[in-house]
Amino acid sequence: MNPKCKLILLFLVWTLILHGQNPSQAYKLPGKGLKQHSFLYAGEWDTRHPEGQSMFLLRGGKVVWKYSIPMKLANGNIQEFDDVTRLSNGNIVFACMSGAGIITPDKNLIWEFHCPEGTETHSCQPIGKDSVLMALNGNPGKVLIYNTATNKLLNEIIIPTSTANRHGQFRHVRITPQHTIMVPQIPEGKVVEYTMDGKEIWSVEAKSAWSAIRLHNGNTLISGDGKSYTREVNPKGETIWEFTQADAPFKLYNNQTANRLDNGNTVICNWCAGNKNTEEWKGTVQVFEVTPTKKIVWALSSWEHPDLGPSTYIQLLDEKGNPDNGELQR
Image (cartoon, rainbow, N blue to C red):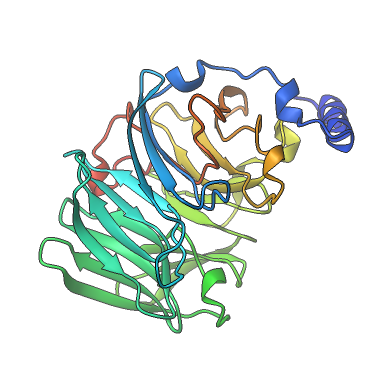
């Protein structure tokens, strides 16, 4: 898209916003909607449903499985689905702010972690079928590796952070194919790579970074949350690809997570729940798939039949690779 066309598109988008119309509703969604992919879907902080925060499994355009938890526990601690991964055996690993767990297809909770008082977790990534990596926001912040079969703590890594506000420290922490750890550090405005003994070996400036994954090509894919960008940087920290509001024909909210597909496309979650006016959520694009040339080939907006709610993380189930060992993190 040339600069003149981009300016015209942005003018139209913001005109619609100023007149109270959701610009996504004026955009013809490309792709096959719910039938484009089979997927596992979860989104945090759906304030419309305090009685049940849900994750969904969809196949053939229909919800075939759903699991819900209350937004608040009896002690007042908040629950929300921040991270979900379906393993090759059908079990699902998740983080829900107040803890983490593994749920079977028949909804048996076979492993559970409760965050100690004064801490919270927004990351829980499988390492094989019997271990997980978690980020524990707190004072100090930590990365934990647990054997879920024995419930034994295998490693604890202190992550330096400049804020005592645990909620604002970090979100999706990921292990790399090289067994280092990628930590998006929100208050510091950067992504930092650590060794398993806590040594910093690489970093890049990235404002509002919510997630960062090491791609198979050695680059790093970063989601800029409230800054509404998805960016790929090389080992030198140079931006080699970026998708921003200037590239989108609909409103971008918080780009919380993104993943690179086997075909080279990128799938981006567009979380809208930071907007407290829930009436404006309907019609917004929750997830979209974009090519390397920034052509959008799929945009999902499902707010009724089924209402999937805000989008934080999506796992496409028709992708090649084993989710147990990070193969889908390309």
